[in-house]
Image (tube, rainbow, N blue to C red; front, side):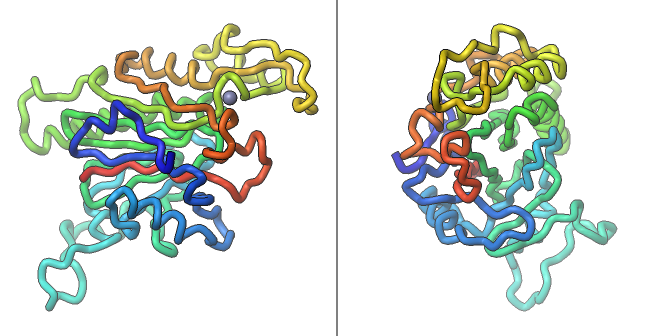
Length: 300
Ligand SMILES: [Zn+2]
């Protein structure tokens, strides 16, 4: 496997998505202040999906529940389609807007939106991306307005409700787009039409935690239940006192369903990263922070 893709989302003709496997090497984009050593790998992955790497926008990933909606205005700033070669700068679609809507920036072949863990867009000019290495990459699609989102969900983000925020923001963005088109009320998006795919991420078979983490998770949100934790059997590889295996995906699914997503619209078929470390980056196994996987979603 070169690229992991959700079968459910692959059936949508106007959508492109996927998670890069280690066939490409590490496709993790750098944190603030780090040297970028993986641009060629990311570009290769994105091109293999038939997309233009210069249109990649990624989230900073700070384990928050914050998502940023990328309007087409910003998209035009990233890579302005120049309708008139005699025009030096692209026309500003909104002259009252002096500065871009967020303090992001273009760096070495991609644009970074800091201080967020998810991105939303309904523009075909943009590729939304996130990096993971055991955390859950979430792909969200509204098939009514063709609005898409990607989010990064580690245990802290899951506790903070990143999946719930992703649904809220996607629905809000989608309905704003539909209103802009003056569609009838009947065409308004229902949340239960949203499709979600959980990408390759650590499963309940491998995600071992200490009992203090379990206690913290149970205290943080009612979406975490005692049945999400299974006592570990004696295992020499767990030298840090890990006492429980936790099913992070089950918690995310519970959050999504409780906020109106149909369980039949959630694809949970992705493999566990730690079960197949030759194919997927797993920080839990390698403790190598330089390794990671880029996940992307884009409209054709
Ligand atoms: Zn596993």
